[in-house]
Image (cartoon, rainbow, N blue to C red; front, side, top):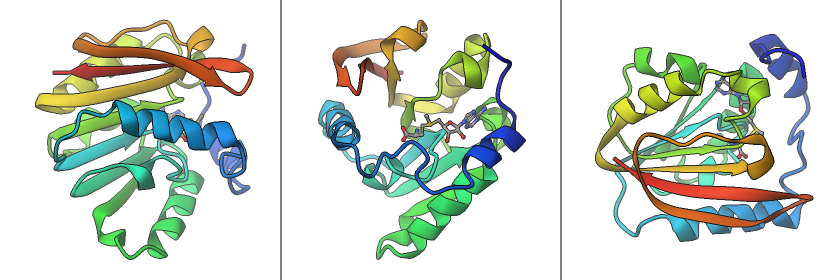
Length: 182
Ligand SMILES: C[S@@+](CC[C@H](N)C(=O)[O-])C[C@H]1O[C@@H](n2cnc3c(N)ncnc32)[C@H](O)[C@@H]1O
């Protein structure tokens, strides 16, 4: 496997809309349902979706204010375009930034953090510990973090209290969904 993908490489990939075909694949609809079903039922003030891509998951998330962050400016461009068509567009805010720069972004504490399909070697190398520290610090006390990843490609655990571990089929893989609380 090569190194960590750069912004330029991700931007190249995101030139086309919906590069992984999420809109058409039934398993991607199902994975959003699995994520929403696993969320503790409560009001969420600030939600942060890290590695949000074009907002496929982001636009389904609860939260008075929802911040989507992705390294790719092209992905953020797609997300902003989609947001502009929504009646609830004021809820959504997107920013092109790396997950590694989250501590420097000055975001308000998050009641809910969602991270799906991002904690893979091609995106973060071996730097999970820095992400664990940065996201744990962003989470408000009692806040919820949801992580969803292809189980064969993800071997990490956040240093938070794990409430849920759930596996389900996803395309030719298996997804591991985890819910943590600070
Ligand atoms: C497999 S996609 C998942 C998109 C979305 N989370 C979902 O589940 O539909 C991974 C996303 O992570 C983004 N990404 C990769 N490295 C990143 C980094 N260092 N910081 C922020 N986003 C990153 C990519 O641009 C891409 O949009």
